[in-house]
Image (cartoon, rainbow, N blue to C red; front, side, top):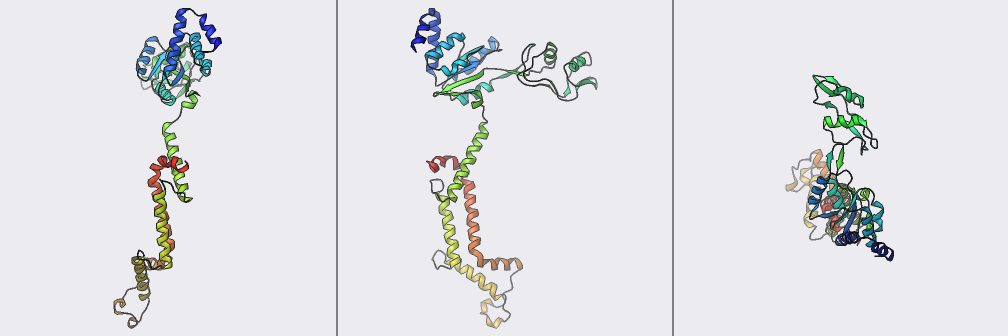
Length: 345
């Protein structure tokens, strides 16, 4: 506690000192501490929210001046500027992203009253209102809804925006929305800012699409994996793919150069046999051929093309091995994130 803060605290009544101490103790007990807005939340609903947070987070509501003193005492000045209006201090040992997600999920729809500011555009949807013909159709039209009587009931003919975000709700609009059961606002704890490990997070920082973020990380890991393979940069994740690719390229080179290696002999013999049979099929003089090659029929156009392509087996083999490497890359995409650190570490 700074000397100035200590002097200010000394001038407080005893009950306020105790309240500040309790708030400071709450802040010290948790890894993440934030300020939440509680305006517009009925007392009973606020108590329900506290119970729902039990075991995950703790909410403490007090006078703003005492909250500011407690934040000053523990050197969390970054949160002081967010103590404005009806607010409380919330503490949790979860990360700020989890806290924000939980608070947003706990919000519930609620009716909006006369004089309140619309948090978003208020739209009366197209369809049957379920209200019998009567003066209500005029009330709908007076607030800007495209409504008329049709098929024995009041119908809204198209989605009608009756109030834009930031505008004040009139008495007529509040009555119509209440009659239709439309609840255009959400009630819940509104996280204004949170500090974790000395870092200040705003709601904009915490409002992320987790699925999209995970997909981006997986895509980045896959690209990194492919870059490592193409750059021939061996890692624990890419070593098996690089070895398989190198093995395929070596075999293709051996076949193309007719290297008499024990591992290549079966393929070399098969290649030579295919070339010989393709040649024998083009010779009309059977006496010029060994007995086992006499009567060999000319290959079909497709088969002939396949036999002729044997001379280009090295290129074909390269393509096949490249395809195999691509397949391996796809198979390894799921493990890319695990190897990302090793790749660039």
